[in-house]
Length: 115
Image (cartoon, rainbow, N blue to C red; front, side, top):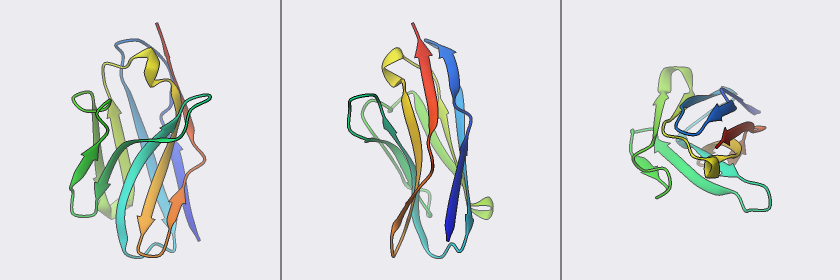
């Protein structure tokens, strides 16, 4: 079984920064990618950023230039540095891990950006 534990969410003013972390543990084999998604109230879950085991990254247009995803393969941990936060970034942020067999999700961490 795979477990994803997120941390780093919270309340921040517009223009501020937060760093999210997600540590994966358990029976992890052949990780293809890890990433972050978010879901705001009344909206569908959407991509924020992903990073492959080889280090290739993919960002949503809304994340480009403000967010940076990185990972520590030795620790099976992925990070999301979020700068210049906007009120529209307010959402529950979910960590995702993709293997050859399936996709795993964390429990989510709330990010609230006040104006």
